[in-house]
Length: 211
Picture (cartoon, rainbow, N blue to C red):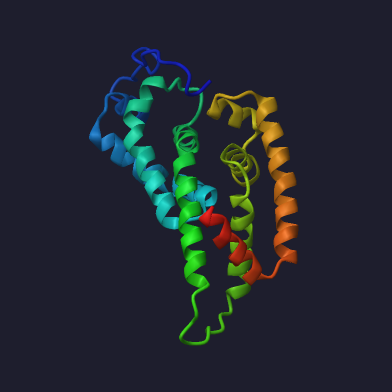
């Protein structure tokens, strides 16, 4: 498992003469290595975090935590995956608090959206696309965090269930079951949201946030 071993990495990455890999430098806790890792992989990790939590600011908070945690995590890195996959695994394992923060933020935005407007809304040529994205985000919000993580990793990131199981220290069958449950719930939730007028959906979200 990717995150299960606490063995020392001293002998895992024998250095070629005159060369030192980024992983070796991270293991030695070189500050410049974290900067280099951030430059190389920030975009991909942030894209994953954005898909997972559905909020740009909170996704950036998650990414920050990932790179802060990276040097310590390298004590458990066994070299059987890419550094990028390792970073995504850290993000997935730290996601629960950030998903909940995103849910609270969207609930607050919903309350504001229900306030009376002082001027009519302006037409927007991208409104339909934005509405579709918002609909999918609201559907994802109905999933438990473990199913949400498994769905995004397998269906959006297009990783195999075996790889995801290794990333999360779970077994393959558990990940496949979570993805299947997530798909079923997403279909049901999307159908419900399509049938429900937006105002009624927002009012329900507001009511649910009060409980």
